[in-house]
Image (tube, rainbow, N blue to C red; front, side):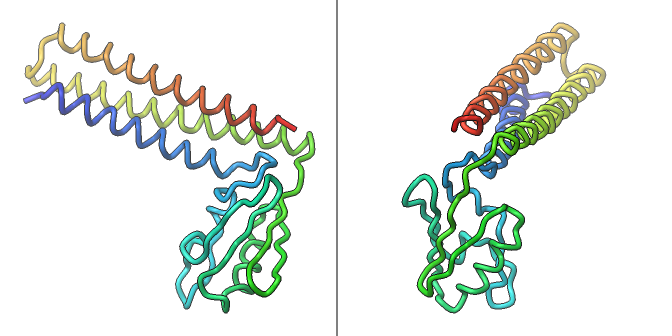
Length: 187
């Protein structure tokens, strides 16, 4: 039996998870301003375990051009410094023996444009992922109609509702992308 409420709740949940993943990916793009999210991709060897940096240290941003990484275990300072340096983020950490300062260099115009291009690529990837969610949902609706659990009119109505949901989430995706691009291009 086809349950409309469950079906659309599940569909919205899938779209929202995709949107949340996109939001997390956008946060990792450098904007020229210090954001602890820049270091989300950094992992350290923490007592034999590959651990995300934010689980082994507190990361703060005292100003727009500096991140401060304060490990909970001071013996990990060298390991954290090495991990940040080798993460290919273009950052040069400074170890002062108590914590690590990570100056955030200004972005050049060329680098800003390159980051915007990467944002466009990520946005397109997530658009495709949301279209896949739509395709699967419409296939499910067609199957329900074929199995005679819904009528042709209901199939048409539900398909239109799926398209409407997709349009709403794509609009959110585009708004987030535009906001991030504006941040990146700001000097």
